[in-house]
Length: 141
Figure (cartoon, rainbow, N blue to C red):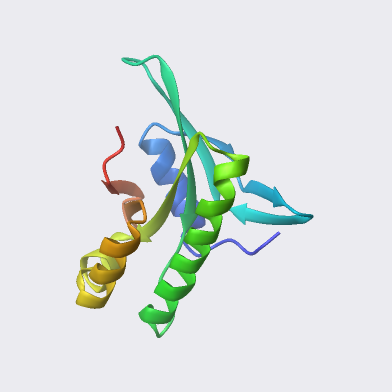
């Protein structure tokens, strides 16, 4: 089992505050004799539509001296999980959880915007102090 990210518990609290039920901590993807671990599986009952919405969330803290290296690792992991989840969890949407401070600074830089525009990862932006979700990109429907 991999070590938990620095903001693991913060994102867990934020998801619960946002109305999500944590169903898996971690969510295991088993493929070809290997197990990979997405930080969370969660679901929310949408009353108006009478259906469950399911997400998987991979938390990244972006605390190393090189945010570009953090981005490379986060995006690589996200893309691998996204591909593998199509077979194991086709009804889940995968989100990359990013601290709000990182999103409003580093994620606004041109190099990050080029990658985001090209790869279109789903982002969950969280306030690391208030332990709340501040933005879903794209918005959850």
